[in-house]
Length: 227
Ligand code: NI
Ligand code: MN
Image (tube, rainbow, N blue to C red; front, top):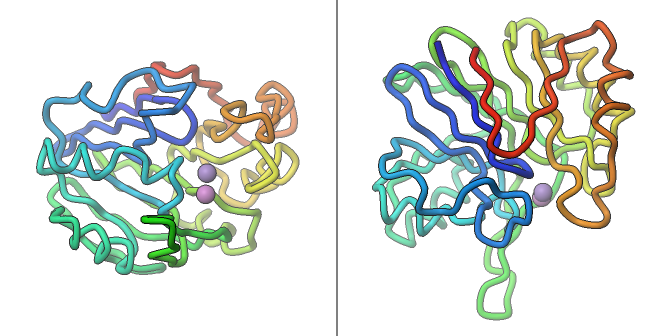
């Protein structure tokens, strides 16, 4: 049985057979974070959906400390390899086999950039992740608007989907509930809301809109979900 622990905003700890991983580890400076960047002594992988600070977060420091391999799009992975990290640079629509299971990168409609030394040093398309753990499929959409590409995920048989509901930069509760109708996961976890003033959303309203399309699991930072 696998375990997904919500760490606040879009960050998760994912554990299963052959994998201890973080997803979008924005922990330092995250007002919702349930743990700090030094909380995990051992990690195998870090999934990074895009380079915005609230997703790339503490990736460099954590990967340096744990020697975890960063899985991201090729350009972001190349940037991070330049910082001395171990990386797997995949791309949208690509699927790869890892010791724990397969990973597919999914489209996300959003931006991706890093300001470094006062300059925009990197920009690339963002992504989401479809991660197979213990024979189950976890879909973390990253930051994205609603898209018809999400209808393709229905055929994958998603066990748990983590979807942003905060609006402004990403889907709001209305669009995220429509996304659930496209994806048809068993369970859905609303993320990326309440962290900053513009990310206003009511997870209970999201749950009402999802209705019986899926089981909505509203996680507080630190909560664990077995799958
Ligand atoms: Ni973003
Ligand atoms: Mn974000």
